[in-house]
Length: 182
Image 1 (cartoon, one colour):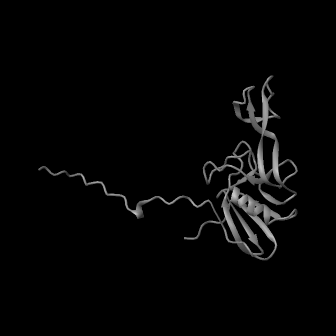
Image 2 (cartoon, rainbow, N blue to C red; image 1 turned 45 degrees about the horizontal axis):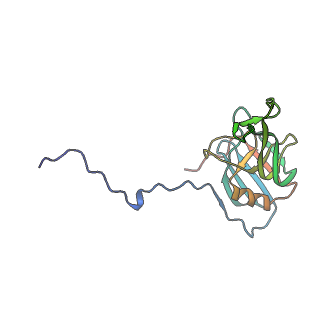
């Protein structure tokens, strides 16, 4: 029998399984104090506070470079559980098939025979007068931007944030967050 220089493949064990990415963590049930939210655009993360204590964090998807999320100090201006966009959505043909999944009513003309299906924005928390807000939505690549300016949250965290804020709750959006400790 001839031996080989190549090592035999190692059988995967439980320690070799890739751990799924933790998208969020909530530990604020029963926490006291006024609520506030801080969003770090460079980290694509949002943190919810009760007083000075962190109550939870989540990955978010903020605005792409072509539609950046503004930074600054804001407050929640509106809470709507089942909001729909008046600008963005899908363009459907007469059979209901998607023609364009990223249709903008303000920029594009609605073709004859086509219909506009507005994007849903569940658990919407408005931050600006021109429509930027926080809501449940898809986060296709955690840590990367993906939206038209809004802050998308995983549905479970959108519900937590929605249920733990009031109109007037402060929201701070920061371009660069603190550097991680070593």
